[in-house]
Length: 416
Image (cartoon, rainbow, N blue to C red):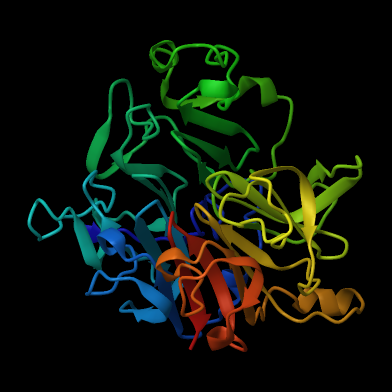
């Protein structure tokens, strides 16, 4: 058995090497620009079930180092488990393991059900991982051939391993899916983008989230009826066969790429179209950075002030993208979102030409957090909620390459 290796991306997986063929090229991102620099992983927030990767499973109110190799290039997080990928292709996991989402044997009492220390995931001989993703209690990896591996648990087919497969203690290859360059996880479902521009999806079909005409479901359907239509293996989204898909929207943490004409678009309350260059989704809220000015917008669930709109915005749901003021304007900023907290990684940007903009995203040196401060998930040294973004002074000036949020914890990748 050989350790699984790969290049990963947040809670979603995106390959950094082309599986082959003249299809879609992998998207550029800061972790491709590390150039061999040593890195470190920091964690803060809820230490429940070992999610922080610290030997003592308590909460961290400020960033603490996770014992990992110094060549980590990307991070991912499920609800209470975490993943890290190294430049040498190793995949490390830690946190909750009751559903076997770590993909490895955890030598602890069965009633604990977690691993507080990172451990190496083993896979079939010769398997080299290129990306990792996580959602809830399921985990995924993309290997160097563009094949997808899954492990953990799902009652609704999210593993994609075939009819009735609800659990996998170790990584298993998904049947009939090759050439994958990106994979995203939602609640009970997953989508994959292949190098020929085709989109595949599987899992829970409620609210038509899979895009399959045969697997759609009406809101008034009972859960039993919906479960009968679960898609247990990857199925091509045939309605998009005439479209070459270039990018998926992340179901959880940040999605990053350079501004361009095909970036995501949403409308604000006045109907103005906002073109986004980066987006992130938490449990019930969304974040976005505009491509033109680098403004940050938020919308959705706001019960923990996770929208960052200030104490005067008291409604629990904000239905329209609304600008968060007082932040640097940076189109290359990166985003992550947890259950009720939000993270922005950016830097001070002065207006300039295209050459200046080309540098943004390679030296992001500021981290802002806001929302619920419970368990220290904002990293600010306190449990106080923050209705507006606050700069994490401890990381100010550090080069930040990646960030990922679980339900109640945060992971940050910095250059040493």
